[in-house]
Length: 97
Image 1 (cartoon, rainbow, N blue to C red):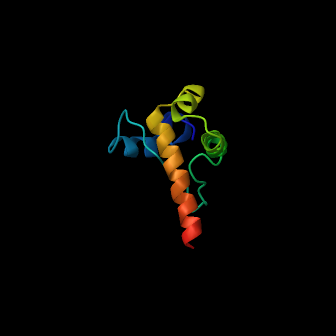
Image 2 (cartoon, rainbow, N blue to C red; image 1 turned 90 degrees about the vertical axis):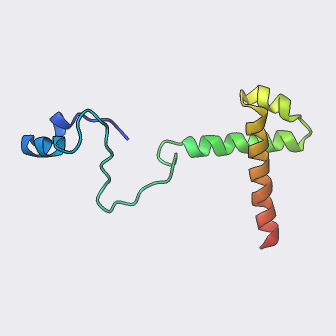
Image 3 (spheres, rainbow, N blue to C red; image 1 turned 60 degrees about the vertical axis):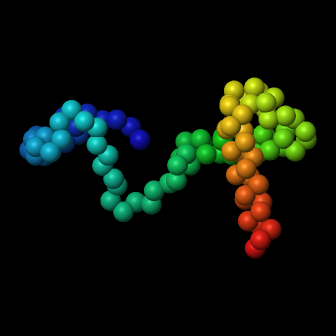
């Protein structure tokens, strides 16, 4: 999502109308019925974190300590535990189906 100055994209009358409700604040203007992409899908962030998390799981399964993984990825041990637990929950859900 890109920031735009309302003065450059809105007609004067609409800008004045909008200023009656909001001034000096950022607002989100949703699209009209377009299909929205999920978080991180349009810029590759979701794929980046998914790939990183898979690497973390592989390291953990190969016996690397949570502390060492945290140091390698510049994350807290708590974050590493959350990634591992989330993966375990997903795997447990697959087994239960």
